[in-house]
Image 1 (cartoon, rainbow, N blue to C red):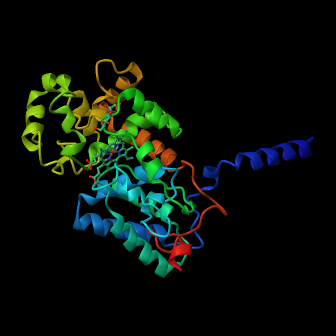
Image 2 (image 1 turned 180 degrees about the vertical axis):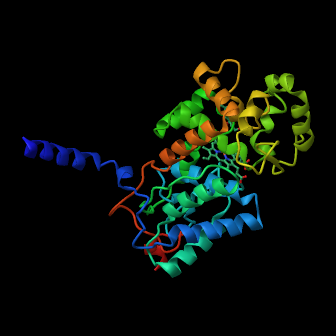
Image 3 (image 1 turned 180 degrees about the horizontal axis):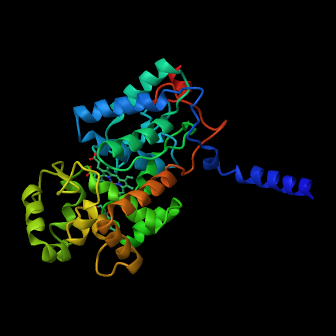
Length: 329
Ligand code: HEM
Ligand SMILES: *[C@@H]1O[C@H](CO)[C@@H](O)[C@H](O)[C@H]1NC(C)=O
């Protein structure tokens, strides 16, 4: 009898480990590179100290990596040897930054423990540290991802949600990644730090797509956006996503939403009149309880970090995050 149970258990174990995310562990580099997380933390702290806006940029890297074929550092690859870089996809071009910080961290890690710590894991640790340094939650990161051998600019254009997405589109975009409504609402709270170009929300201010609800609900906010972002020109001017506390990772984003002062249309989609009750309730709950937001954000970002990870013999550990090893050597 006991042998039967044991066999069944082993069988279950075999099948469940097909889901590669199960193979990640907080202790993955415990023996092979015990100082890995400490090295990353120090370098993120130094980079954010030099340029406080870098924290947001570093957090966003994980989102734009994970949503495109999984958390495999495909985002970091440059144009080279047949690779067409995701960095030039519409959502990334002239927008995503922080690559030099990752390069620097990788250089130090290659000195400390060559060909051991993957670029995909670096992105994951960096995002956690960036959030924590801005006053957000801290959490244990799961490690052991491998780096991809390819990139996909077309997937980057297709999979990363656009700022003018409707709620329906946002929900199905997240669903495609195995993420639910709680993940959508809590991860959108990343917009408590960082900035957006006028280009990303200008259609709400002028012309056919003018957002009448925003204009009516908070005319001061609307006017101030118009004064920074004229109808033509200044497309690259930067506005904080959270005007109240742009450098602090807090729950102010949700209070902004309730005031009708979310910067992007995709932010305001979470609170529009026709928004479904479950989403509205989450927004209000996070606005009232920062700790709840932090708890949900933490579990959602860990979940996002598990999307289609490569483990074991899949992929490789890159020597240089910008190139696959076969090109580099
Ligand atoms: C829900 C769908 C989302 C949409 C449509 C969206 C869209 C955008 C857009 C348009 C910008 C401004 C880019 C620019 O104008 O240069 C931005 C910035 C940012 N996003 Fe999102 N985003 C979404 C979800 C997320 C998620 C899930 C995260 C992280 C987990 C995230 C993190 C950030 C951060 C930190 C910034 C500021 C970047 C900086 O200051 O460098 N976003 N997002
Ligand atoms: C979003 O904007 C793009 C580019 O301006 C446009 O092609 C697309 O139709 C818009 N999508 C929605 C849902 O409004």
